[in-house]
Length: 103
Image 1 (spheres, rainbow, N blue to C red):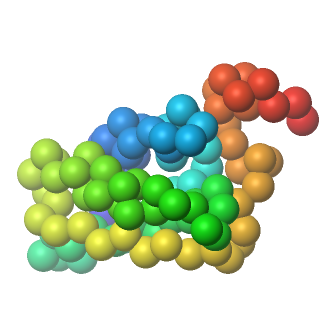
Image 2 (tube, rainbow, N blue to C red):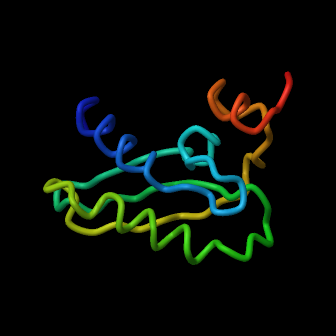
Image 3 (tube, one colour):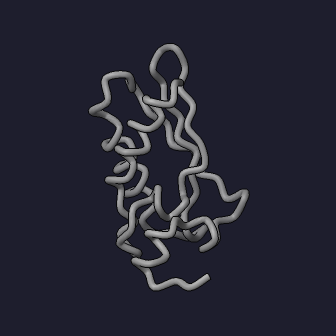
């Protein structure tokens, strides 16, 4: 996957907002990796802010919907992982400011 496509996918994923925090999953640092095969099968490896996140299914559906308009993406699988565990240090500067988090 070239950098332009990766940037397009990450841009689309910025439209997916964590409903509890009100900040997108990219700026929260929840997206760990993207892989796509020759057939257009995209695998998004990501985490959640907590293991017992009650909105996990909603977020997965939103991820799939967000990238569905990209012509290169034919199908999407979301791989939820908890290693490494998410921490506030993974957030972008924007997310930290939006949530009032200090370093």
